[in-house]
Length: 125
Image 1 (tube, rainbow, N blue to C red):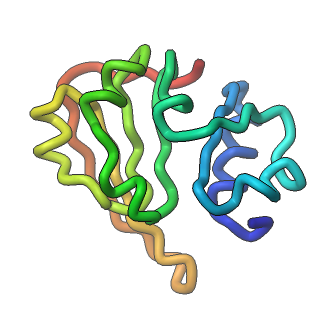
Image 2: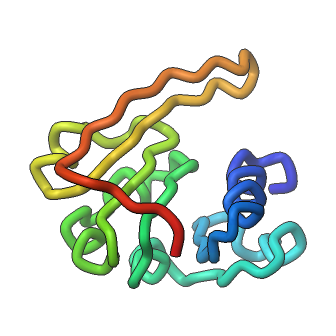
Image 3: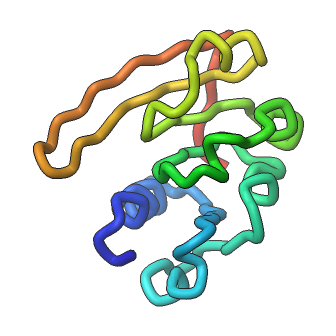
């Protein structure tokens, strides 16, 4: 977990003043060792409750099959950053979700991105 891109992203967001809630179906038992001032949640839907945005940086099947309407309903602002390009930007837009997507190849340091938005977006919590 200490080398996971999620840890770096969390620290970057915290340095900008964001309050973080996190969930990973595999890393939760050790997350407290690497993450401080982070609320650890039981599932992605708990993370979404009242959030200003979600950042998805894992490819676990659980995240590929989320109920996106349920996520949108739980969020204060329906913004999802898709760090693994798992979601179809057009489908996200049709569901009323503001999206940004990028694919990070850690070994090559190459980033490829795209975004789709149904209106203005917000960040921070």
